[in-house]
Amino acid sequence: MSAQTFKTISQGDIRWLESVQLSKFPWLVHAFSTRKGGVSKPPCAGLNLGFTESDQRERVEQNRRLFFHQLGGKHFTPATVRQIHSAHSFVIARDVAGELTYHMPGIEVPVPLSANPPAGDGVMTAEPGILLTIRIADCLPVLLVDPQKRLVAAVHAGWRGSLDRVIEKAVGDMRRVFGSDPQNLIAALGPSIRSCCYEVGEEVVEAFHGKFAGAERFFQNIPERPISLTDRHTILFLSAHPPGHAPEHVPAARLDLIAVAQNQLASAGVKPANVLVTDYCTACRTDLFFSHRHEGGVTGRQVAAVGIRKAVASA
Image 1: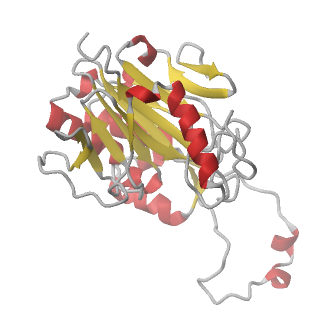
Image 2: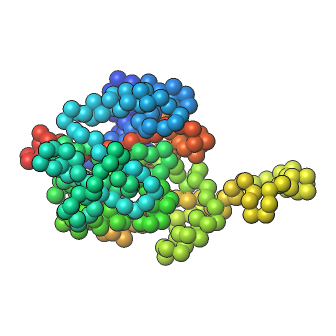
Image 3: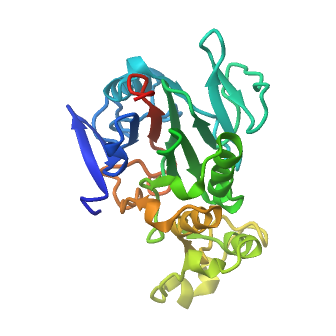
């Protein structure tokens, strides 16, 4: 990772990544958390910031207090969504009582809230004191910043959301709702599983080719593996499962989520020079990050966060 692009911030045992370029804006706070620090035990050892069945809720709550405190927690109210691998985004604001409200882009009436936040995979705001957060453990986190209008957004982009153009739609919502010029936007792409480790099946390859022209740029071929004992003596290893119900996933290619994101950002009008990319693969670096795929689905979650500081909101 280029030292001129992203930097590691350490506060005590807690570490997170920041974009060097975004850190130059005094009105902005942002972070891509790592698993360093925190109180969680294996299999979620470290700074697990997601409520999962693999960790105790009390430990996650303590981790979240530690992390958000370092980001200036007393000045921010964290806001998130119930992530469902969709292309839905919400505009987050405050009502007259100071409570958070969620709005569908372009609709003034807020979404009725229950005990849980609404389902979606993108959040955006123009209001200071709201810390937008998304949880990740392999999917691609994208932070969008408009330095001209002082707007921010956070997007959770797995393969399903990327297939539905969640990033491109988020940029379009920022333009439609707030009047952002996409050419002014800066996009920071955080740690995620990369093409070196992200094997997908033929159904994923076909789905992208059905929705994107030139989708071959999103995939890399899987190197041929040596002939195994199973290949030489196939009859000995026949599955007892009915045809079409074999339990093993047969990979067809490796998906490059970064290439998909860059394509969508370019299509939405964001300048390539304004797209900042970390080099970290979560599956390769489980010493630094949680990886759902590498750790068999039993692991914790990182958080990507972005917000507008109150103190300098009008500076």
